[in-house]
Image (cartoon, rainbow, N blue to C red):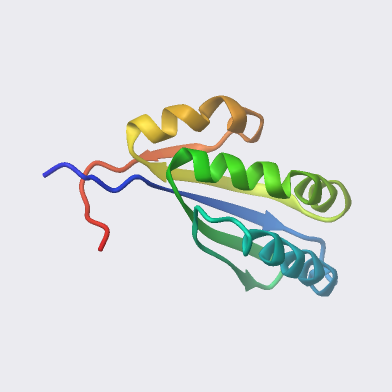
Length: 121
């Protein structure tokens, strides 16, 4: 059974210096505010464990993901320059959707997981 699900999810993991999680939270609120305006965003949220942050986000296809990156690009650059380090980045989606994001995401060296089977209700 192949999938017709074109959702592309991206899973960045960040680390911030000890004692800086409250400062990081101010950025997370700003990211969420920006994502609220994106029509192709299916879900978006942050989980925190100590000084580690995980962003769980999904988009209607690669175009939605690329639009998100455009929307938050400046804020993400500031977050990474001033506070956070990307420690892991995963991208999940069909082979065709993943192919469309490989070049723009290359600087982050993500791991790609190809969705082969599934449904979206």
